Image (cartoon, rainbow, N blue to C red; front, side, top):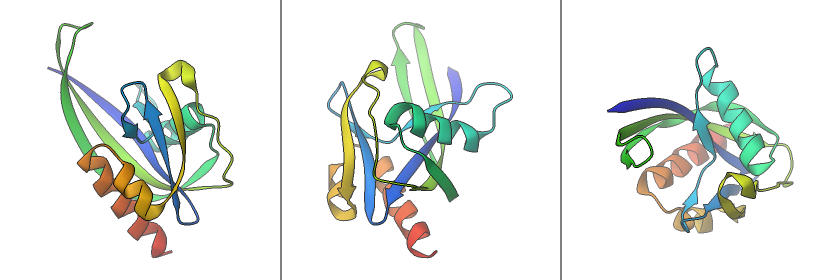
Length: 136
């Protein structure tokens, strides 16, 4: 099994969370692969900027997740291990990068965004990030 370390951001502006809609119809959070020598926090910020066009600042670690899938191109199972950061956006401006497989995205009020998220692990991260950001 190929194990890949990744990092991502749970981005809030005031009490709204940002979600991306991928080409499979899944509402997800921005994330990406940590390449050798890179810092997870930097990768998370870069992926938020690259995938969503959002300038954000890391507040604190929100949690970790992992999931497995079978890669047809690699012909082997893959496990993505992701460290997530609670982030605050500097504005509501965003620009979804459709070249990376996203067909939409946007800001959602916390409760609506929570219900919108496709995966339970991501939903738990949104809850955790919201708690972290409310405490500051």
